[in-house]
Image 1 (cartoon, rainbow, N blue to C red):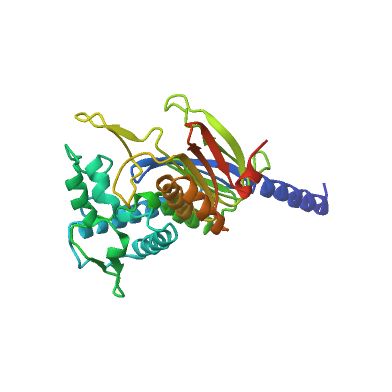
Image 2: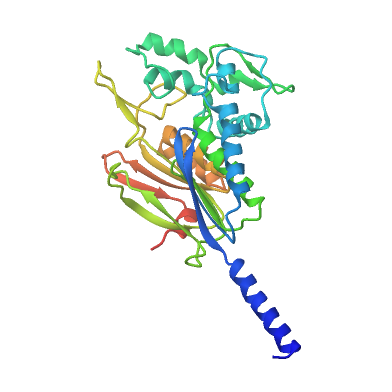
Length: 339
């Protein structure tokens, strides 16, 4: 074999090996974060350890800033009355997003319901043995996001030191957004991030050369036998869901049923006519927050707000005046459902 043929063969072999080494393969990462589990799927030619480090960094930062379950986190210190905490950018972002949701939902999304959530047994403290009308009126003095301000020095002002902040209804979605940002910054173009049921996708599922498929859980679904009500194709969007069909508590004394979605306007943990809500938005933080707000608002107020929010789509399951289960689906959401 002459030198020219040998050189040509070398170039061809190198090219073929290069193509093979650059082939995108599915990489799956699983773990625990902010009290739940995550599953991350992305396509890359190699398993870059910096991606996992970036994910861990986001989770650790979120815990340090916003976890009510960690005693020395910033939010825990603020809830204990420490007014000298200088909040970080994560806390500030979530605070500003929550303030916007609070205003647009007319108070139905409210991170100051933490006192009530703890009292009803859905927080990080023991529930009250008995919640009387008098006790409820007393606790309502500590509810209202308008009573809390983010100051220019990044410290938090609370009108009453007993006001308890709880951003769990938006922090999960925000964590997903930051994880996606961290992974995308490392050149990944096709990924799916799921954390505790909330999901954000970018690009495609390359195994099928198609958009990522997402399932919407039925309200009849059992925890050990989950059923899907509908499937949809999600394109560079986020989806978050909320429902009281599984998250409730029966009081051992009064036998009263309390749901985890609390109405911030009256302080009651009672089921509205919305049974479950799934929201699609550009960011998972917004999807997460609005899914919670719609659960508290009820169907008519939710419909009105959805008509005003052009960047939000929703799939709401509700009970009508006759007790029959109905759905309200926005046009944008309906277009994504697989028929």
